[in-house]
Length: 192
Ligand SMILES: [Zn+2]
Image (cartoon, rainbow, N blue to C red; front, side):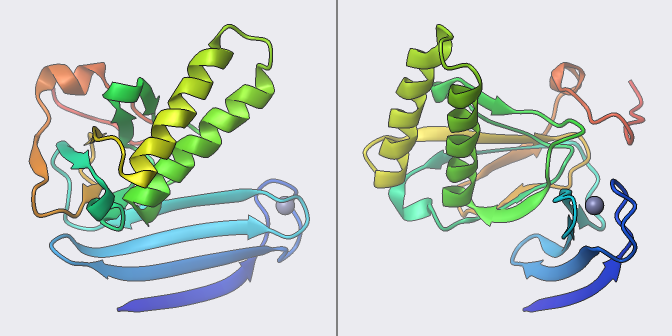
């Protein structure tokens, strides 16, 4: 079900000649379709970028599902244009120049949040937010252990993202929700 193609390319950041591994992985996600995951990693400067591209999905979409222990391995496709949030924990990842697209599962999404919060703890060690961050980490642990339930929401104005789950609530984004989402700088041209 998976196909990988790779080659060495010039690094867009340090300009190293053929120093970066470029990989294109194609995966067929059930009930969603063919997804292309692209990544570039430079051996010299450590530059790393990844994104996912889905063909034939372009309606602004919103997915909502309840995270529980038996759903941790459910597939998740998060494109660069998507906002991922767990409102109960007060955490959200919005699209931006540094945001990465990925194919993962619920557990992987939670681990990404975990890493993000841990990095924030290191960056702002004396901030008042410290306690809040520790509280969030504790709740993520509980979600991973099945001791807590919370909703995961993915909103994607370009319809490139997906959560694969039989109970997932999927619908089109409203115009108001669309207007409230941060969009990645390059690709948006929506009719209002
Ligand atoms: Zn480089």
